Length: 389
Ligand SMILES: Cc1cc2nc3c(=O)[nH]c(=O)nc-3n(C[C@H](O)[C@H](O)[C@H](O)COP(=O)(O)OP(=O)(O)OC[C@H]3O[C@@H](n4cnc5c(N)ncnc54)[C@H](O)[C@@H]3O)c2cc1C
Image (cartoon, rainbow, N blue to C red; front, side, top):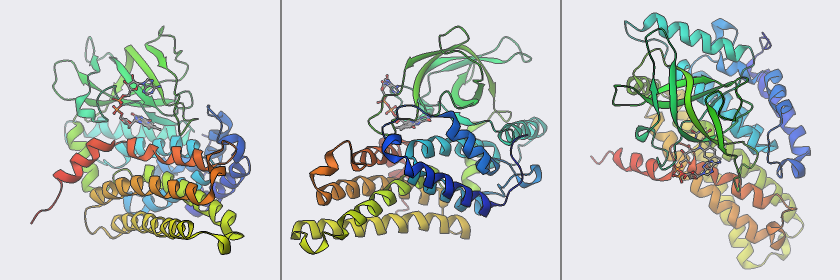
């Protein structure tokens, strides 16, 4: 067991320190195209993994109402130092939430579900990273369109999963990856997890790297595309994805807020850096620059209100936190894009240089709209969820 019992405040402080160190290496980090294992070891040492473990197992996750704010804060702060590391880190609690936020399964799955939950939490306690490679080409981020399949010869044998997957952030760092596939003989996809430890990416053990991540932003996330052929996979022990998702919503899970926290952190870094840079020029700013900067202030304020509003909904238990999270994610995706473009116009041509961080931050922030639920699917959900009366 690697992690030791820590208090939430202590973990937040540790992450502040780590993020400050990352920020001091910013120029080099923003150009990275790969993850460094040492960063993730440092995060485990800081206690981040305890957020994926319940208190009765020595962890810090006391449920959605209690754990969401500190978790989002950790990710927001971490993004100040390294957006790619923060985005990969956000996948871990987002994935473990699939077990954390579903405390009990109905018979006959009750016992098996509890056993699986404990197994998952144990791995987090032991410092394993979890990630997700659910996305499939052409699905638009809608996992109900999953084409991957899973079959098994008998009830005692593991499932074998076959399909094309992409955007597996943290590939190479993660020990376990969840994905979705349609079990043979069934109509709807379900969640499976794959033990990626020691699995080569040459196709010889079920996983073939088909495209290494080459993003304009979040460049170091190793969000690779993979082709799986008969890859051994374990199915969720309560085999009813729809009911599990429903339970997570009822528990007050704010959709996408872990991802949003990362981008809120990116915008904060950019606004702070630009404010410092513009301080000496404030009296010589042209009217256009003054107006644009005023808009930066307005949009940055709106982003903070939206971020905080979701956390308030989660903590008060009033309202629909799942919907608040979704509305916030899409609003912040649009506002972040606009804020970072305006900052570039005010800062001047230098912002266009690759020696300046603004262009990197702009591309990093753009990830939010593509993250689950991706643009079109997210707007479908917003429109379909309108309370017209
Ligand atoms: C920075 C970032 C991180 C993400 N992390 C995750 C994650 O960890 N897990 C997850 O399940 N989803 C992740 N997503 C995906 C997201 O959740 C949506 O599912 C996705 O953006 C929706 O894309 P699409 O199906 O519309 O893509 P489409 O535009 O339909 O498909 C993308 C196309 O790009 C091609 N492509 C070529 N190389 C690659 C490559 N290396 N990676 C991806 N596509 C490639 C594919 O062939 C495919 O045709 C991430 C997205 C972004 C932008």
